[in-house]
Amino acid sequence: MSSVLIIGAGGVGGVVAHKCAQLPEVFSEICLASRTKSKCDAIAAQIKEKTGRTIQTAQVDADDVAQTAQLIRQLKPKVLINVALPYQDLTIMEACLEAGTDYLDTANYEPHDEARFSYEYQWPYDGRFKEKGRMALLGSGFDPGVTNVYCAYAQKHFFDEIHTVDIIDANAGDHGLPFATNFNPEINIREITANGRYWEGGQWKETAPLSVHSPFNFPEPQVGTRDIYLLYHEEMESLVKHIRGLKRIRFWMTFSQKYLTHLRVLENVGMTKIEPIDFQGQKIIPLEFLKAVLPDPSSLGPLTKGKTCIGCVFTGIKDGKYVEKYIYNVCDHQECYREVCSQAISYTTGVPAMIGAKLMVTDVWKKSGVWNMEQLDPDPFMEDLNKHGLPWEVVDGKPYVEQLAALEAAAG
Ligand code: NDP
Image (cartoon, rainbow, N blue to C red; front, side):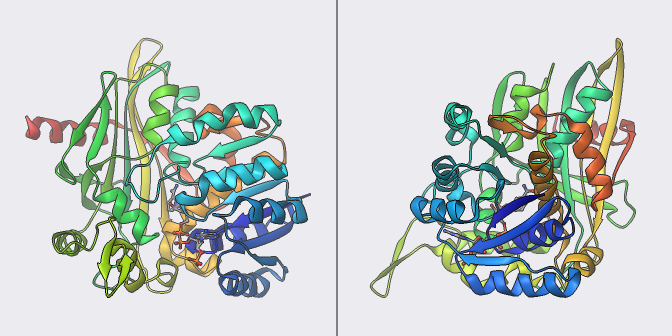
């Protein structure tokens, strides 16, 4: 029986709160805190209706270490789940150290004024978390998160050496709106408009944004064939350190032509810029303004139909033989909405955050210091994915490796 403090009442925060509330034997007390308390109260009302449980709510500005530490001291949670924005990671980690609790997040720190995300800001906290006997678990969402655990599971059970990993993230959902992002628009657009990057032969290689792409036929018929685009994604930064024998790792995401056309126009007119501009005597950041006029991702739940399919294609060696595997999950937007009033993108992030916290508070993943997901035993996490709404499949990777190889052949 443990108490949990969740910070951030957006799409993901709502799912985390619902999923924690479904496990009263693990999370006996839940507090959902965020900048706007009315959003926490609305989620608390949904949870009351779905589960009969009452959760606490609170207002907090997580950019303020002292205020956040005070809330931690008041509630004494066993773990704090940070599902606010990546900008708050460092202040919340500081507050956890100051007030004494364990920390979990789903996205690595990003400075506000630079589209740059890296673990280099959070890894140096390792010594301080160790000194205090506290644990920080980084990136316990789906990607990063489950994709890292899939890698650890493949390393433990199927390979002596993993040579290549292709992480492939497909969202075949349709919300019927001309343009909307399915998680925080600011973070999403910063990620997609950055240069692509992958790691091969011990080096990072850069590609122009969204310039490398190909059709890919997914195992789930309702996802079918979609264009996948090479992007940089944060889990690669830790996986290159922790996966044995790795020669190449890439990350791919699907986008529709409609989405990309809107994005191109917004970029061309300057709406995705993060440098402040003067507007009627005020400084505004175009991307922040764009976020304010785009649909709130948490409002897409009732509208979105279709499925997601996210997983990892591996090649490598086991007992001297070449092996290919594909591990993936398929998630249905409407089923997620029925269960926790949210679409599948928030669901696939919120469920792993709950599972990571569960393994921490039950001392199954008991550590001190700063940890990435693939450094921990994947088996209990994989078991919990099957129990808590994100079941996975392992299949022969050959047809998928062949498709990726065809792409390389076409690129010359
Ligand atoms: P939203 O924008 O929907 O929600 C963010 C929430 O954080 C809002 O409730 C916001 O409050 C709150 N917040 C922002 N700043 C502060 C602050 N200073 N103090 C307190 N609360 C604050 O985002 P999502 O729910 O879509 O995403 C949440 C996190 O999940 C992000 O870090 C995102 O990068 C990550 N993510 C991870 C994925 C993965 O697979 N690993 C996938 C998708 C998302 P307010 O309502 O007042 O604005």
